[in-house]
Image 1: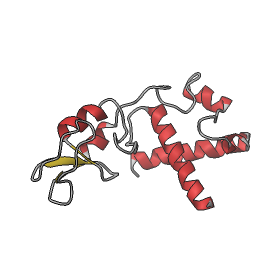
Image 2: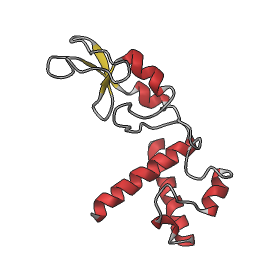
Image 3: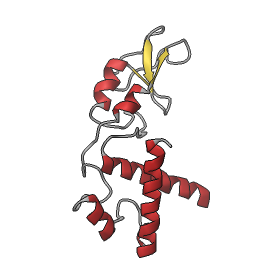
Length: 150
């Protein structure tokens, strides 16, 4: 079993236990979701959010796993990197994020060392910060449950 799968199982077990203690607590939006037990377990008033109000770096493993693609005509040719605003030249290798947005490697690496989001669409990569990762997984869980309800 992969560690990420184990983390997801632990998070789901935690959410199930929280729901049993207070069934209404999970009905609130993630921004207003607070549970005394969650705050106690996670250490003080950090409840659900990584470095509260601060950005967190993308996990090194997630950055290393990013694809390098060659810019070809019609694919990325003529598209500019939203970080540096320079055009991506045909025949050059660029970084492709999981959301399919392209960036120069020299631009995206410093970006991901500060934040775990795509500069274009705010897609979140995994992070090594435990609290931010719990928040990210929680938001994914809520989005997927909204899709199944609708």
